[in-house]
Image (cartoon, rainbow over all chains, first blue to last red; front, side):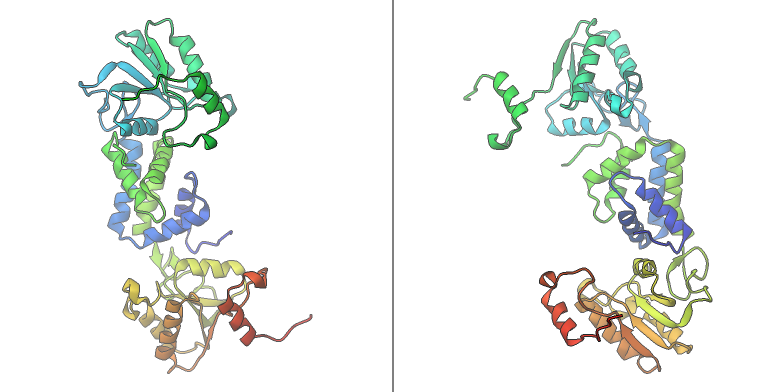
Length: 204
Length: 204
């Protein structure tokens, strides 16, 4: 549907929203028309929040997580184990892992994954910063928590090759049948690996 | 999923996006994280466009369509028939009808529809403005192009009762089987009405 907009400003707003992932022009128009029902103060707050994302939001100097200070709340939390670093692709992955409340170490955000198809090589990722952190010493374990895809495996392998000279353990997320999944609907690669890497049964 | 945000600003941005219709916190987070990859100039443009929706966008003094001037491009277009007014619920309906390129009259935006369930009565709609326009004279036809729902019918009936003292024709959109539809999948109320209101067959 190629609509004629009665206002250039309305069209500009629709085009801005349509740049967001998963939002086409039709959805963008619906969102903008919804916003028109709000008063100008609400729109000013919304607009300023977006502007501040560009001007005020900072990235943690240690792990590259987003934060409001120089150092993120996780890196500056002395109760957390600073000797274990969990390497993730992006900020959302930190939030998802934090949400499990099972991890008490710190993180490192790569900002992506090695993917020649998308033109992402090792130099496009925050790998040098990770190397600096490891070089300083005191790191006992590096958890590679990347996607279980070809690109994730490639990146894991690259990181291992580059960082294995430093004395520390490398680990990766356990792969296997998801809790709650029926075997019938588990893909065969996952199921095959789960049998090979079977774990002792714990009856307690 | 109830995530802990590493930054209050990030959380504020996610909450702003989550106020939009059809966007939950999970989608909002995805949108905001996408925006973080843009530079601050792009974010400033985006934010300012939203702010300007509240400060610069105007509503046509005649028909209440959105526009950049006092009078919208449709009302100020002298080639359009100013004696036919098509009454619509909202701005989007104007864009959709304009897109058909079949209508050369002007519009009037009610800003909603009479719906006691949603607390919308006649006084919440731009009906007085419509009455003023009609009162000035020169209007030959009023097309009631509201939703084919109970609320739409109620509003049509209300408008007819209130505006019928003024000498003009009232019409409404043709109802019937959609072009391209198979009879098997047409609802029975539409089909029943289509038989009652059958039209002469035109073989040309």
